Image (cartoon, rainbow, N blue to C red; front, side, top):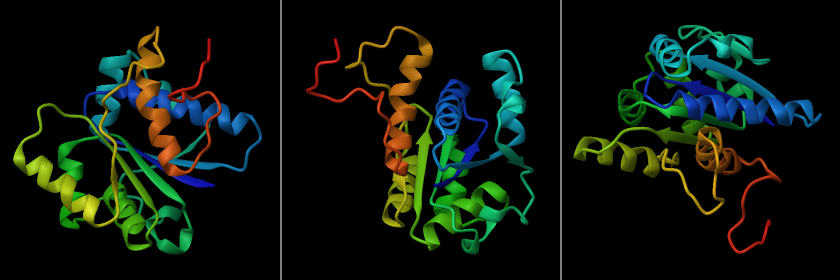
Length: 190
C-alpha cells in the first residue's frame, strides 16, 4: 500500500504525530507499506509550538517540499492508494473543494479525487461555519472522506496520544489498513 500523509498548520499536531507513529510501527512489522509526507511551513511551526520539537524530521518517511511537483504522488501514474491530510486546515479544505492545486498537498489531493482513490481529511476546527460545511460537502460529493478530529472515548483512553489515536486509527482504517489494536464496539478487550 502507498500512502501520502499531508500535514497542515491547523492546531492538532498530536494527531499527525499519532498517525505517523502508528504508520512507523506498521512499517517495522514488515508489511508492504510506502509512506510519503508533505508538510506546510505552518505545520512545522505549529508542531514545534504544540509538541516542543521537530520529531517530524526524524521519522523514517521521505518528506517532499511543498512545491515539489516531481513527487511521485503529484501524478496519477504514481499509483498511490490513499492520502490522509492530518490535521487538515480549513484553508486547505477550501482549496481542495475549489480545485485549486497551488502546492504539492492540494495537487496530491486533486490526484486522489480524479483517480478515485481514498482522500481522508482530518479536519480540525471548531465551530464550523457555513463555508466550512459547504466545503466539506463539496469534497464529500467529489469522493473524499471527512474524518473530523473528534475523539471517541469508548476505549477509555488514558493518555493524550491514546485520545488522538481514536481519530487517527479511524483515518488509517478508512484508508484501507487493518489495525489489530483498534477498539471495536461490542467486543470485550478487558
